Image (tube, rainbow, N blue to C red; front, side, top):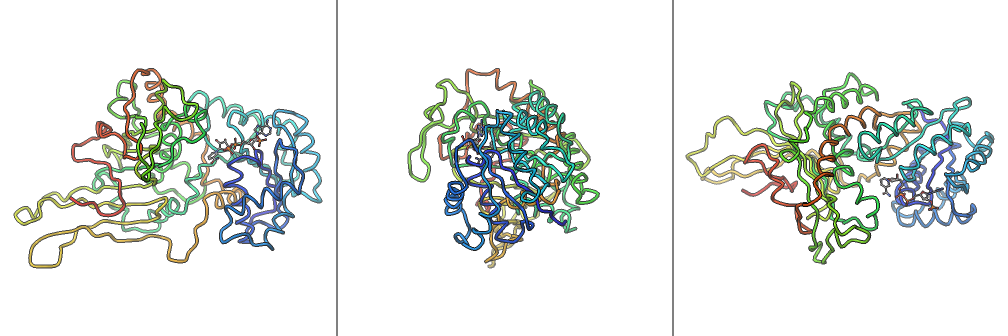
Length: 495
Ligand SMILES: NC(=O)c1ccc[n+]([C@@H]2O[C@H](COP(=O)([O-])OP(=O)(O)OC[C@H]3O[C@@H](n4cnc5c(N)ncnc54)[C@H](OP(=O)(O)O)[C@@H]3O)[C@@H](O)[C@H]2O)c1
């Protein structure tokens, strides 16, 4: 796809997301000569900064984040692309003054992308103001808007947000980012599934016993109590990133890799997920909160001791859920999703457990039970793709061990790119295949909504786990079978 020059407008340019992700990603695209010639970056902020101050802030951001340090020649070119515009997003005049500046087509390409790196509560009004000031018109070039989760707080608020967005933007103008989908390993999952035939015959209920998708963090909530205490792990991770990963693992091959074909298949999966009625919540979902503990040999506070957390909070910092996809491929295969803060290690993984052989041939030897085959996909921090097989140990005795076939996609010396680089480029190229469509968002809320509602009613008790552990043992309650256990490692497990 050929990218055209555009003006990248960043609302909330002085904020954290812009500092740690957006500006470094745009800079790295410039390093790789992937920003089309003439591309401009317009930073919007409240602070009374001038061009010089903004450039020194950007240098500061890049000093922390530029791979291999700042390349001065590229930095010079990058600075020439950048402009700073002061304005308050709640004031109509800040949009009209921006429109006046951007209308100068001699300087600013008339293709425009608006990245709303601002509070989600400001999305609807900002889009309205952008429209009223004429900035979303597509007379002289295209206009696209990027927003990042949370897309609503529950099903109802997500529907209401969508209603407000749809008044001013066509669906194809809206780019809902889930930065997980920009990760190379996640995209490699699609390549693994659809560019190879070997696994396809096995990729179903006849061969797969169950699937686990885990996102664990060692970090606590830091200074984000105000957001986190009203959100919790189910909204923050499961409704969004983990359900997205689930769709990529389980969807049917799309008719093509075009955005709509891909998104149609993801939607079919979400529609096929067996609803969890409120009375089944305890059998299918588990929540917990961290107490004090040790992370890397340092004592850390409990959730309730974190700044600005109410003393009676029952917000979950750990959530696990069991889902079934009621279609021909996956009927009755349990899929476990779990996430937590202050856990033993930080990692995102997909672990697929295959069924045991129908009979244990080696029963009368030293081999008591063969291990099931696992397919392990590490998304972060370790990026890997492994298939575990049982092999015989060398020697006269009939003993086995587990070895893994490694199909990891990065080779030594190949550098790592950040997910935002991929996604920001996709927007310029008009490729929305890795962005969420409104129906995906709505269906994902429908899945978790009954659980969220039930938990909101049950305010007397929440299970706990010490910081630095893998969460409560009691979360096993959601397992379909006694033999299931949480898979924590990407290396072979001992018996
Ligand atoms: N940070 C992350 O890693 C991360 C990750 C995923 C998603 N997100 C999402 O990204 C968005 C931004 O998050 P953030 O962490 O960057 O937040 P943040 O650090 O609080 O930044 C918010 C930005 O909005 C600006 N802003 C607030 N009110 C404004 C107003 N009335 N007029 C003009 N500008 C205003 C702030 O400007 P001032 O500097 O003047 O206050 C600041 O630049 C949120 O939707 C968040 O959910 C963030």
